[in-house]
Length: 450
Image 1 (cartoon, helix red, strand yellow):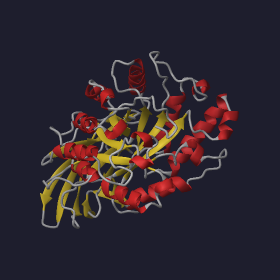
Image 2 (cartoon, helix red, strand yellow):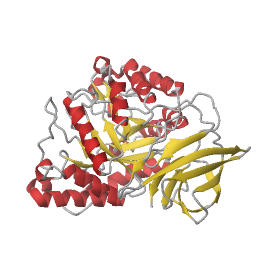
Image 3 (cartoon, helix red, strand yellow):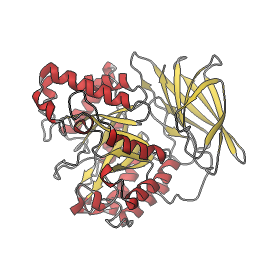
Image 4 (cartoon, helix red, strand yellow):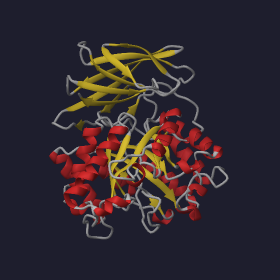
């Protein structure tokens, strides 16, 4: 979604079924990340902590315009475990002049997220709106090449730091036609969306790649079916796509669709994860907010929810008071509704899922909870589908991996993300993690073909 989007748009909502405490084996496959939890704890007191206990995220959009506001950053750092830059990664912000890139503002958001151990959603690589002025002078092949260069450069700059990219945003028309939006990018050829996804995968093979849109919350609507058909086509032809983002800018509780859970489930059945990407609801209807969480819990491939701003005063719809905190930073009734729903959890472990990689390979990583000691715990990961795998393991700070076996391991700069590769000892490996004061969190794992 954009800060310039029109209020009349009714967007859709997605959320992934929360898992209860996991005492046995959890399958985490390729692009889908799943947390293995080995113990129980008191109900979480923040949104992100509760989501993490169920292997999910609950995030917010952040703007550099407010990073100097300590009340804003305190709420963001305390409550959320995922961040989306509101405008800072869009084309006009990152490439103001052709092939002259500016990442300063986006880097501020990334640095804030990294320092608070938050996942980062990249938003958005290719979109008809918020393009820099120089793009208007291009068309045809020149525009296509400029778009692909932009996708490649931005995704490469943030390689290894982004959990999910909104590769293409809002490419389908409103109304009942189910047609593509008539945009300058569409006029470069009907394959422009495919080209953008392939370029994004080549630039960052470790990030989930999403198509993101609004008004796709009713399964029978022509626009929703058009997006579903795009996913079916990509899956059938091996075009990389891992998830669909439903923006969910709702105009009130009355507009929350009765069949929304069915829509989430049907998208997931196409073989992609579903994510609620830009949630806000007029007057912060508490029931509707709780329903979003409940519907997400009911769909195992719903990864997480992002609200589109921290406080009502920060919202692009500030006059409608659509968020979980009022302008003074106070928790609203909708906050309590969401936290209660998050803490209530859902039934059933997420089922295994396998993502096909470019070139036809696939990879499955199964997390097996091991022995828990007073100050540490063991974990085993079994890999299937390939002998040339790369498994990324994410640990929640302040936990740290102290020992590994049967792998070649490297870490990112935070020490919280480990990349594991075979070392000739087979397709099963393990590690010991020190609690360091956090005894509830458990690892998340993703797998890809090396």
